[in-house]
Length: 317
Image (cartoon, rainbow, N blue to C red; front, side, top):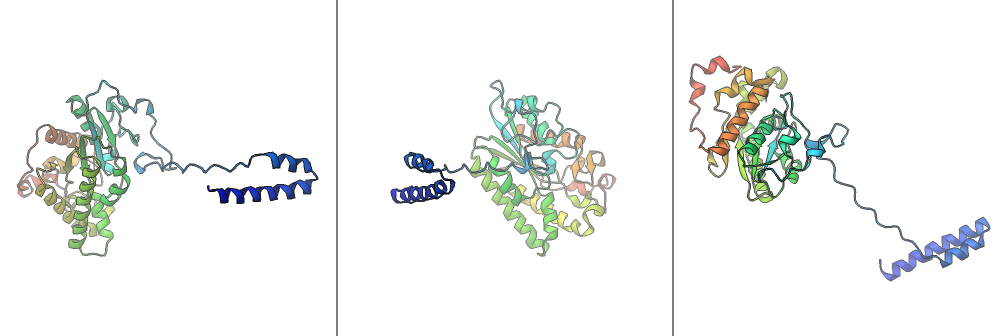
């Protein structure tokens, strides 16, 4: 505050003190006030940032209760694995998701030794292999790509070494609500997805990025829950993501679920054909770990869909 402003504040303060002193019949207060140093209230600190969506209860407070294990110990192997995604990454569909997670890396064996989501199982495998001893799960139920950029990426540490990205199902649902033709809608989805990957590179330039395409929900999603109109949207979004991921290999590691027969096995699905159950999560984690430990190009085609075995497993519309 400059000298002129301080003088104005001092004058105003003294004027108010004079009026109050005479009103109370206490001129001694006036004398004491004149000899006192004017105290200017300090500016308050800004409010702390809101609890991220992936780490909050319904009332908005922090949800995790295992903070005593939040900081990884020095005994762990180096490396940090971060799981980005939607409810499947969060752990919906399994008995023990251990979410919401803290806003800092954890030792998964200390924090959640009994976790059964694909992200947790992947983290355990990477820890055992000596590749990444620390883990963060920033997945948000219902997240689409644009939301992921704004609500998950701000918490991606710069020292992240491995990132998995499992998104797309909810973008199909968002696409359904648009008035755009399907072709234009999925084109926007592809642009957002590419923007997401660029943002990950900017935040964690040394991270290895593992992309997971999602099964073609055209064959899995319950039309009673999602509506018949979403079927072509699921189909288009799934195929455009599959092509995008394949076209960008080997820049990114690829985990192909759209061509994996077990992905469509009813025994692997939790509900409504969207979330894998614990068996499905284990299969997915195994696929992610295999790609990280033994990289391989994605299949060139899905001939399995044309086989007679497909009809035995897929919930055909």
